[in-house]
Every structure is written in C-alpha cells, then in structure tokens.
Length: 456
Image 1 (cartoon, rainbow, N blue to C red):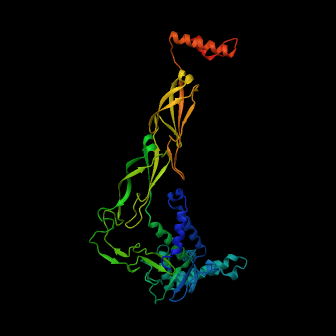
Image 2: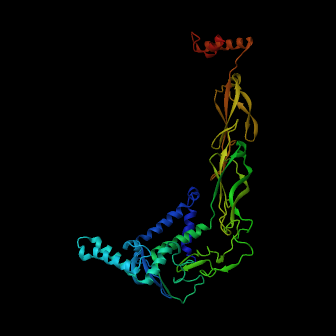
Image 3: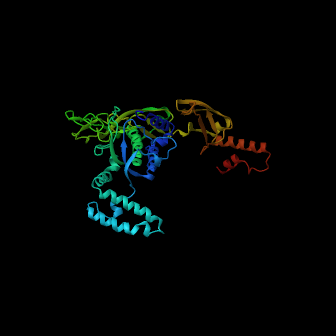
C-alpha cells in the first residue's frame, strides 16, 4: 500500500477543514489523535510473534476486535502491565535460586486452592507463574530484559532492536522469517503515532510577532521591513548538518530508504531519522541539526484597512526545522496607533468639524479632511451640535466576500462666542425679542438666548 496513502489523505482533509485559530495552536489535534491511538494499549500483551512471507496479516480484518488482532503467536503469553521483578519482589540482578525461592513463597500464599473465597488470588497466582517461567529461563529472561529496557523507544525495528524482528525493507524484499517477542498493541499504537509524527516533522514551527502602524499606514496600506528572531539555515554546513568532507554510510537498518515497512504500515527509520544515511561527524555550529538561531529580515505588504487585533499570515516566512522540511508561517498581529484627527469604528471613519453658531443657524460650507484629501461639505441650515453628515464610500476598505468601503461621518461641533461687541449684542437682543414674540410667551424665562444676553 506504499506510504499508507489513505491515512495521509484523511489527515490532509482534516487539516484543510480546520479553522485558522486551531492550526495556530500548535497542532493539538495531532496530539489528541495520538492519544486516541494510545488508548489501544488497554489490553497489552507480549507475544513471540512470527512474521512469514505470503501470509496475510489479520489485524486489519473487519469485525475483529482489537484484542484479537495479533500476529500468529507462539510461546508463552505474559502481561506487560506490571514488572516481573516487581511481581516477585526481586531486584534485576536476582539469581535463579532467589527467583525460585520467591516464586515458591508467593505461589504458596496465592494458590487458588488456599484462596477459594478470593477471586483476585487466581489472577495474582497466574502473574507470579508467568513471571517465574520468564525469569527462570535464561533465554526468555534475556529477551525480556531487552524488551523491558528498550521497548518503549525502539519497538523492535530501530538501531538497537532490528536484530530478530521480522520486517520488509522499502523495496518490498521477502523470503525471510524471524521471531521476536514484542508488544503488538504498543507497536500498533506506535506505528500510527510515527505516521502522524512523520507528517508533523515536515512542518517547522510558526512565528508570531507584532507590528505598530500609524492610522494612515493602516488605512492606505504600506510595505514594512520586519526583523525577528528565528531558526535559520546554518551557514557553516549549508543546512546539511555535517561538514562537506564527512564520511557518509548507508543506514544498515533501512538500507538507505529512510523508511521501515511493516505491511501495510510505513514509518520513518529512527536510526537515520529518515535520511537513509549514517554520519558520525556533525557540524559543530548547529550540532547536526542544520539550523541555528538567527535574525530573519523580510518585506511585508500590509493591506489597506487593517485594524488593531487583525493578524496577517505570511506563508513560509517562519522557522525552518531542517533541510527539506516545509518552512513555518509568520503571523503578524497588527496594532494601530491613535490618530489626532480620525477615529474609526470598523470600516467607518469619524472626523469633527467646528462651525460657528451662525453657520449652524444659516447653513454654509466647511472644509473637512478625508482619507483621500480635504473636501468642501455643506452645512445644513439649523444644524445641531453633534449632528452627523455621512459621506458615502469615503471610509476604509473592508475585505470579505464582497470588498467595499465604509463611510466617513462628519460630526459638527457648534462653537459659541465667548465675547461679543455692542453691535452683535444689539442684533442678538433683537433676535431674542423676536423669538419671544413668536413664541407668544408672557415672560422670557424659556428663551435661552435672551437669558445669555441678560447675564452677559
């Protein structure tokens, strides 16, 4: 089945349907998916497994429970949930005589015939028997000690566990048969984990940074030069991780393919990390990683209409993990400085215009600033303090399914004079008296203008 293509396609569809916020948070979904497969370890068992050519594997058979999906097994079955040395209460260097004495003492204590009213005694007795049969046999004990020390890391096909584990190489070579004691449930889970981990290793970590823009830059758009800390390619080795004259050997585990296949699964060879080569000499600058901490410089085009809190994604402008991996993304969080003239509410812009009280009464025209320059607007007759005048389409660009511009609103502020001359006073007093007559009022208590003139 090659590279287990259906699982990769599922994974890609899964990622493509995720919201941006989910992807930014570090790929928790992959960790959650891995945890699901870790639950397969609820029934773990060590088997002496035989891998023969031409025999189909039955662990993918539909309708078969996970507990039954093991390779054909021979030899003893024993639990891996507890440590055999711990079960017998012995140290790892216990002698055969000490193992025998401990077994007889515990077997006598937990024998089912002596514990007829204790259902757990039978299970305990079986654990003791399994531990004794394994540790008393030198060959089984040696294999158990090997698995106990390295099963969690090697799973039987790495640099330390390749000997004796049946597998197919990347070219599909057949014709050999090995037996090895392995925990298949753990192996099954680890294979899935490594498939997804291999996909994740192809992507470098993203970078998040912040940029401060003026109101004009945010409104009209601009180009900014950015500098930020990032992992960059090592100049000493050009990202190889080793010096040019280093001796390179073909990996003996994967035979240069970079992958290990246990049909139908394929995972990255952990001995060579997927490179297919073993190199003992590493670049001293990057310690073999091919990347070092450095400073990255890029030019970023800021689109018009951005606002504080917006985030711009720059593809493949982030970190680099290793040579050949896909670059991480750069996420730029926008912060816009306050402007002394304009204020905004989304794509709409507001500007204040000061007018005299005579302009407010009689109307007129006034010059106001806009994002594209100053223009003349009409003051409506009888304009009130705080009244808004809408200038359609003069606001900020708003991006979405349909791109459009917001509106600009002119807020009129009516300024009252602090001091007036005698002629102005006489005119205003005459106006106040006219208002009183028009209102048919017997007193002047309700006339605001008359009150202001009287106290002035």
